[in-house]
Amino acid sequence: MNSLTDLVLESVEDRKGVEPLALDVTALTDITDTMVIVGGTSNRHVKAIVDNVLEVTKARGIEVLGVEGREQNQWVLIDLADVVVHVMRAEARAFYDLERLWEQPGVARDVPAATPPGTA
Image (cartoon, rainbow, N blue to C red; front, side):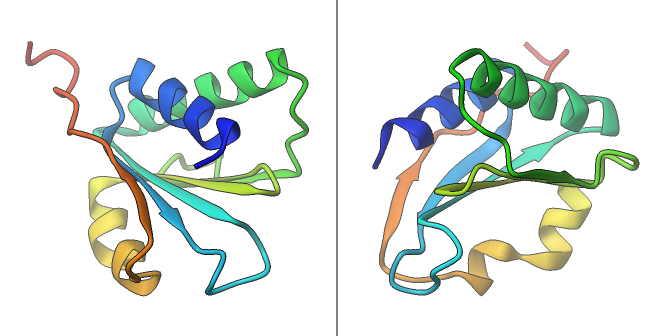
């Protein structure tokens, strides 16, 4: 696991991302090395997670190659070259099931689920 992946996971955990998961996809694609998939409980929660990832990476001088989906905040993709981040509402995450799509033995890190905001 690389430090960029760790930085992204820390930033989504800071915003109570739901079931963050990092997948090592180096054996499956040349597009990226790691995919981080994380859930949000609402559009506002997805936006907060995305904003934090962008803020933290910008502060470290990491180039963001692209961000897609910010208008609806149902599924937002952040392209950081070596790491691609998918922040998704639960409905979108269940429907697209990216974990199964990219399924392989190389799950890099499975982070314990965070308590949804307002339930602690």
